[in-house]
Length: 314
Image (tube, rainbow, N blue to C red; front, side, top):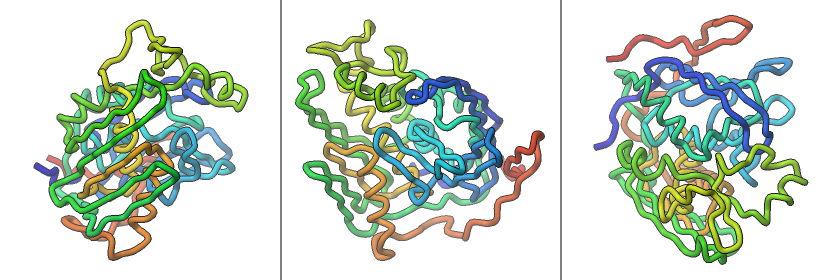
């Protein structure tokens, strides 16, 4: 059954951790927000605070992670795992306050974010939830990789397939209809992964400075390097599904459609949204389709503002 009302966090959440690429500690504060606010990032600690809407139009890089915002005014990187948790659990509105350039990687999955959200719970608004209904197929390709959105009025179905030459991963496929129960059980705990042979190259390029066996599944010569092994036999494709849920959340509203991806990643996930929105005939906005109202903000000290959260919840 589809969620019919907009939801936000029932209470603020604070999380700290290390960025997988920067290697720096970052502090994250998740604030409840009013209906029709959406997910917005507030980058602090700069000469001026920077607000960045979490939508595909704000994406500025997709090479190793999904980045929103401009580097000169305050970009935020590696947003996909938090966005995935929000989408998977049905959080429509929140302000994400962050004091660094990259979200914490935690254990490499979305589990820590899910646990934190579940601990405070959700507040359901009286305002109806708006859905993005895919009306006709759109497809993008990059070499052998492809991604496609097609109609599915029942909800978001994910059909994700990967195919690696490395025999430890090989070819894996997973199909799932997204729901909070399924997300918690089958997707949220799947960790990011990488190849030992790529680590030195990434370090030289200034990436993966915070990567370790505590937050990454490391694939070596013929084996999984992590002593505990895998959490799922197909953890690799499950993590690709986790990333896809987070990237597709940049549509700005829940999608009614089937997403099929072959050898995809952040770049294709965002590209298929760009293709969908390129033609108004591709989609319809349904259910609570009232226009987004202006966002009100209230001061909480140190020049930082949060959404003025109306208590219209039950």
